[in-house]
Image (cartoon, rainbow, N blue to C red):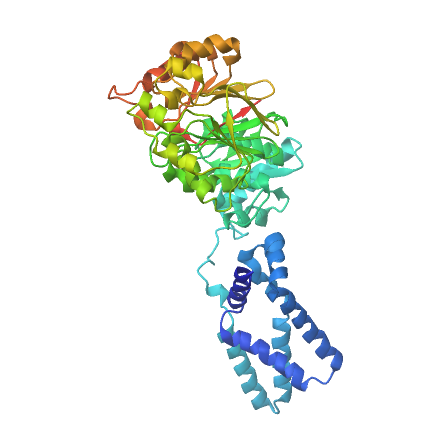
Length: 527
C-alpha cells in the first residue's frame, strides 16, 4: 500500500504541474468556505471535493482503480473528476465582481489571465505536437492501413474488423477508425495489465523476432483476422502461419487469416534461442486455455530472459520439465527457483538421475556442479519421472519414453546425457518427440522398444543436433520438421569439430523443415 500511496501523490503532482495552478484551486476552495453565502452551493462543491480525495488518496480504493480500471501509469487522469476549472472560474468571477470600476476590473482580469498562463501547461508548445501531413493529423500509414482493412472487410463480408499491428501503429489506429477492434494499444506499450490473449499476441509481434505461428494461433482465438507488418519482412513466415496477402500500402503489407482452424485440443509449442550465442534448450508448450509447460530453460545467465518470457505468458507455470541436470538445460531454472520474482511454479518434473558421483565416475570429463546446486534446492513440489510415466496438464499430454534406469548403465557411460528425458507431446492427431540430449548409445534400444510409436510430425534433435542419436533413429521418426537447439557457430560449423551440419543435411534429405536459433522464436501448432 505504501507504493500505491506514493503513486497517488506523484500523480497529484503530475496532473497539476506548477504549484501556482494548484494554489489557485485551493484559494478558490478557501473563498468558497469564507465568502459563499449559499449553503447548498458550498455543500455541493465541498462534498464533491471531499469524496474525491477520500477515494483517490485511500490506498485500498486507489489500488482497485489502478489494478482493475485505468492502470497506475494514468492514475493522474482521475483528477478530471475534480472541479478544478469550475472552482478557479468561481474564484475569478467573484474577484472581478468585487473589483469596482472599469480600470480595476481590467487590471484584475489581466492578473488573472497571467496567473492561468503561468500556472497551467502550454500544451500547444509541447514537442509532441507537430504539423501533420493530413487532415486527420495522424501518421499517413495509419490512414492507409485502416482504409485497406476496411475495403477488404467490405469485399469479404467481414463485420468484425479485428486488426493486429506493431507498436508504431498501435496508438493511432482507433483514432482514425473506431470500428476497428484491436487487442492492445497504449496500455500494452506502457506495460499495463491486458487480457491473456492480448498479451500473447503482443509478445508474438513485439517480443523480438516475429513469431507468426503464435500470432496466428492467438489472433484466431481472439477474433483478429487482419495483420499489418512492415513491407516485405517475414512474408514467408506469415504466409506459412495461415495468412493471405491482401495488399501493400506503402510501408506496410496487409494480411488476412485464411481458412485456418485451431481446435481446443491444439497445442502451441515454441522454441527459444540463447541471447549469449550458446547452445541451450528452452521450450514452452501452451494449450488453448493458456496452461503453460516449460521445458528446461538454458544457462543460469538466461534466467532473466526466461523469467521475462514466462511473465509475458501470465507468470504461472503449470509444469516445469527438466530433462537432465546439465548447465545449459537447468541453469536458468535453478536461478529462477531461488528468486521467482513473481513467477509461480506449480509442479516440477525431473529425471531420477544417477548420483553425481556415479555420473563423474563414468564420465570424468563431465561436470556436476549445477546438478549439485539443483539437489540443494530441495524442491517440495518435485516429482521424479521414469520411462512410461505420463503428465497431463489441461490438453497438454506428455509420455516419457526414456529416463535414467539400469539399462542406461548397461548401454552407456554418458549417464547425464543418455539418461536424460526423452518424451512425446501428444496432440489429437500429431506428435512431437523431444530427444533432449539422448545419444547414439541408446538409439537401437529405443527403436526396438518403441517401434512405430516414434513416428512423429516434429522432433527436437538430440544433443542440439551434434552427435546424439543415430541417423537410423531419425529415419524411424520420419518427421516433417526438426528443431536444432543450436546457434550459428554450431549449426553451420565449418571447422569439422561438430557434426551438426551432417545432421542438418540428413534431416533435409528426409524432407524436414529445419528450425534453429537463427530464427527463434520458432512455433508450431500441434494438432
